[in-house]
Length: 172
Image (cartoon, rainbow, N blue to C red; front, side):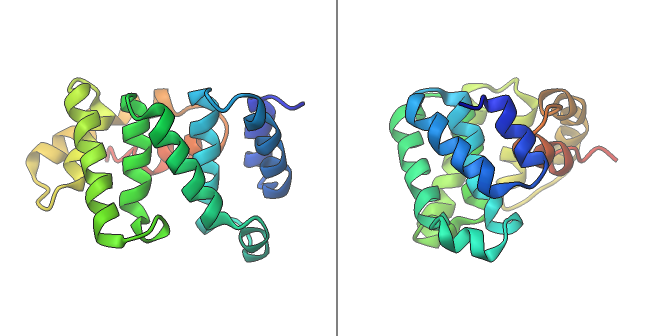
C-alpha cells in the first residue's frame, strides 16, 4: 500500500488516476486521519479545475467531493484547520457543494470560526479578512504578515501545498 507521501508525488506528476486509486485504498484504512482526509479532500477539490474531464466524470468527482466534505464535517468539525480548508474551498467553488448562497455563507462562517479560534494564525486571519465584503488596509497588512508563514507551512509536495503556496503568498 502506498503512503501519503507517495500519493503526494503522484499529485505532483498530475497522475490523477493513480493518486485517486491510492487515496481510496489508504482512506479505507484511515478515515479518521485528518492529515489524510485534508489531502484527499483537497485533491478532489483541485481536480475540479486540474483533472481531465474524462477523469472527473469517471470517478463521479462531484459526488466524491461532497462525500468527503460531509465526512470531514462529521469527524473534524472541531478542528480549526478543517474549518480553514473546508471554508476556503467552499467559498471558492460553492456551487460544487449544493445551494450556492447557503454554502457560500457556510464557507465564510467556517473561515470566521477558524480565525476566531486561532486569532494569532496569520493565514487564517488573511483568508478570513479576504472573505469579507470590504477589503482594506487591515487585509493588506495581513497579506504581508502571512507571506512567510504560507511559504513555510505549505512548502511540501502535493496539490494542496502547491496551490496554497502560490495563491496565498500575496506578499508583493
